[in-house]
Image (tube, rainbow, N blue to C red; front, side):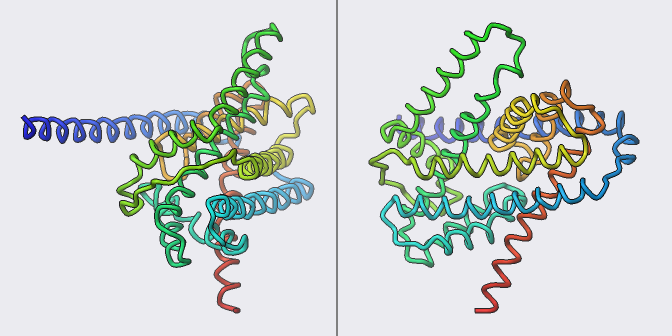
Length: 319
């Protein structure tokens, strides 16, 4: 009987892996088809976009804001390790985060996590605690993105009853606060650990948070706010928008970023973010301008990540 159960378990695991792989290819195929069709329809207009000196200055500031966001993300990760009782410096966490972050574009979308795990172990951080910090960071990011996306929910919906919208927003925020309670957050961490255990070197996490991770959560909120400011600046450079569109643009950005972060598409969320942003923001910005905005924003983000990693490497060689 035990042999039969073992065989059934292995078969179910194999089927689950196969279905996940097929789902990934379906998502990638749909995203590529959607983006290709949109580019073919509006490609000439995108190529015809011209930026003046003010637009270029806006892009330069957007690059700085995006780089600052990634630096802050490294500080937040170090803070998570400190919350778990580790004596790590903020500059160490920032340097490791920036050096490993660029690896998320490699196939598999897990090598940045693996790099942080290895760096943590070299810094004498126990493998279990390092793995826990690596899993907690994206969990808090997801909760922060949901909270910020909820702020602009009403303009993205067809509802005109403000009471319904405020009620839904309040309910979502209440769920987020509940999910951040250590009792529930630890359940999410354990589930993520089961998914990532093989990737993170088989480290077992038997630790748990004992208090609300407020500082880290506020840090993740600040990270997304800086990323959103960078997105606004790119929008201003390409297609200046009315001030009353700020709320909807930020909410659309947050939702697109969140789905690009969690949906198994191309490495680094490439494609999913653009497809969702096109769908949500097309009513508020011309399609041609929006395509240009998304292409430039993706380029700026990649440059910021590469610049961050390069600056850390140069600083280490000088020491």
